Image (cartoon, rainbow, N blue to C red; front, side):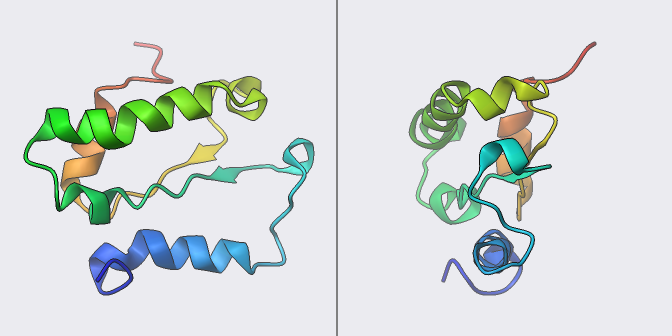
Length: 100
């Protein structure tokens, strides 16, 4: 079910980039990083926003924060795709790159 319809967009983009000529496995050669999270699929089984943060977003932010490429351009070269409004709304609370 995660690869179908509007909610499958995250999976479809991931599959596209895995097989794309624009893909590189060398982080220093990458202009952008697509970060597949399948959040829409995973969020379906979450009871509330805190469960989603605990299960999806907190581990993802911890993982990304350990990657040298994540800090390279202050996270602005990392692309996240949210196929639903829930994930984008929750992710917004992490406020990673705003300068407000």
